[in-house]
Length: 120
Image (cartoon, rainbow, N blue to C red; front, side, top):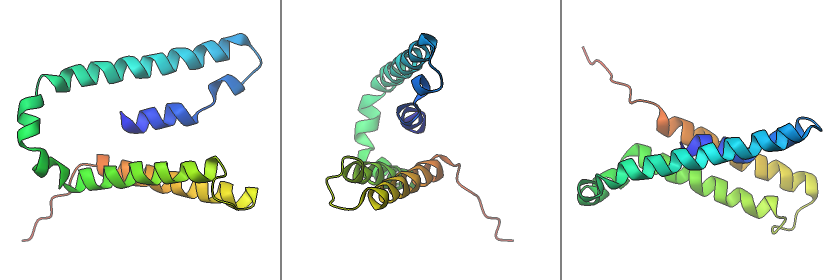
């Protein structure tokens, strides 16, 4: 869901055409994303006690570390997107896109199922 949310944020659907329908479609997709997040949070809320008891185990898994790295990379790209780092526009955009792509790779990798290795 985190990857889908980032994709929805990055996709400028309203710029696909001049019709008013594109802006409506973008708002509908974003509202659908919010609804899915609320549904997901409601599902997780029912298990909050058991999740809280296992918080250290959950946070130390490779999936959590990769997810955290992906989020941090996306957060770091914001400094280049808003030109807070004093670089020429083309280099700033290069760093922004590189950090976002690296964050996406980290999030995608975190979502992959673990590979079991047969040691026979």
